[in-house]
Length: 147
Ligand code: RB5
Image 1: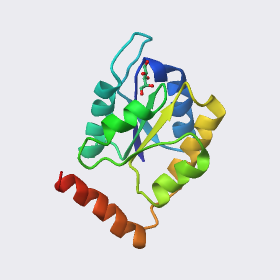
Image 2 (image 1 turned 30 degrees about the vertical axis):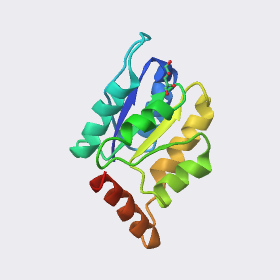
Image 3 (image 1 turned 45 degrees about the vertical axis):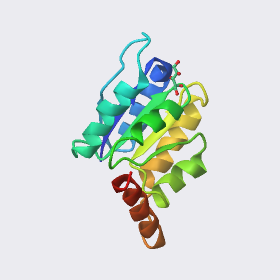
Image 4 (image 1 turned 90 degrees about the horizontal axis):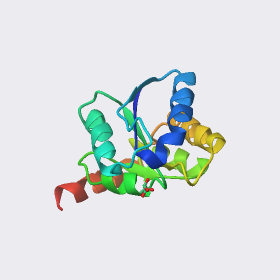
């Protein structure tokens, strides 16, 4: 699978860890920045990464900021994106299995590198279950159409 990573200065510390874990699991990884520890706006990088998902240049995005919250709010404003901000493995798994999330958001000021690796592992290795969850995801997409 193709993954794209986007981060702000608050997420910089986890970029290499996430990239390494994704590659270990056999994925191709693109990185749209930020590349240095200079204050930037997370929404710019959420947009850059999510546009790659929407255009099918990437299958999934992983967004990293200080908390994961700003990135998830920004990403969820983009049509077709289902972003989940999570900080423990069960929710990372469920975000794929039940919500068909296509973007994982994590906070580098909230979790350490080993939890980050676990979140990535769960997200990467879990498929959407479909069935009754498909109906619910369809309704999420309808909310976008009607807003
Ligand atoms: C940047 O200081 C911080 O606000 C940002 O990384 C993120 O945590 C926002 O949600």
